[in-house]
Image (tube, rainbow, N blue to C red; front, side, top):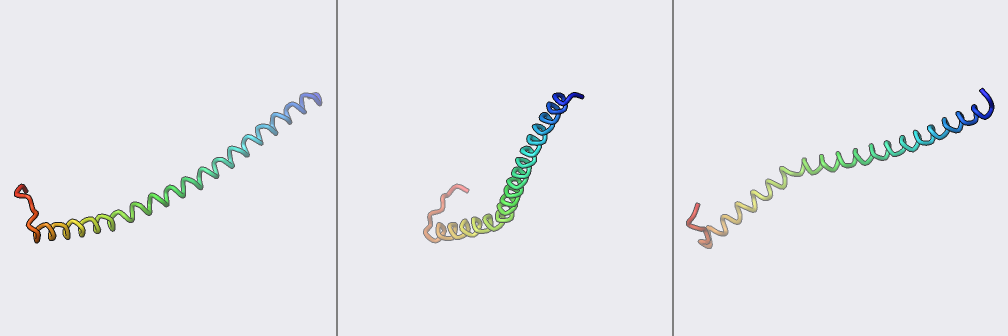
Length: 76
């Protein structure tokens, strides 16, 4: 190979290496973001039973208030 060809190949390889590095950096960033999203979703899923319990308790309290004030509809 001539020096010119070797320099061209070396330039192309350096460009490929730089692009690969940028892709690696972007992939690492996406992995971090995905992990954060998974943790957030996990927290939400774990909090759902507590939220349902609170809504159920409020529903029971509201039903008692309606019953005491005789605000219940005749319809079931």
